[in-house]
Length: 248
Ligand SMILES: [Zn+2]
Image (cartoon, rainbow, N blue to C red):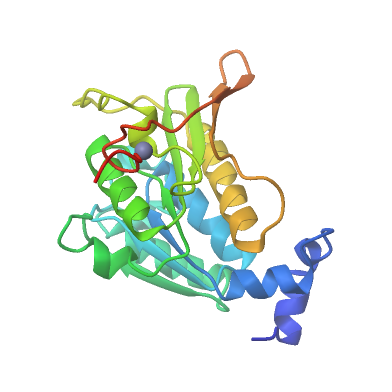
């Protein structure tokens, strides 16, 4: 697959990056990425995936836009209140870049539909706000060997890591116990998920083009109150129920 004159012009500034080139752009064009959750993280992630020319972007979210989403879910405008997030987002993303395909799934991922929705993606982005679905995707991605980029945000904090099945730890290696289910709305400033979502897209582009070094086996913690960023090393658990060597 080659690039048209308009694609070469549209992506000119990234094609110029050493090690990226036309070859990197063609790789993006041939790629399919799932954005699971079109909230504060997923809106920004899908904008940058589409702007960068990832050939197929899958949006998954069953919710509709509400007024209290609009401080951070920037694909939702005032006129989108009450509309399905994936549909309103898709319309804007197609305006941004008609060269890419955007697929909208207004569903909640479950064991029943996960194969159909994200079965053949190259990378999945965890843009969720609940651990139940997160762990479902983790287990699915490990079983199908799909790289998964995890991010989570709250208040003025965020975390991100990249999971390449069997090459590094998965979410169940890292979180021995499922974090307690939160019933109240998470306090958040929009720029926090925007930052983490941008990092997720960078990780995805690196994996898809082969440039740089992914955040595998490392978790980056961002504390925006102090503006301090720390990386901790993570290791695989041999007895991990999902990816462990001792698990049958
Ligand atoms: Zn594991």
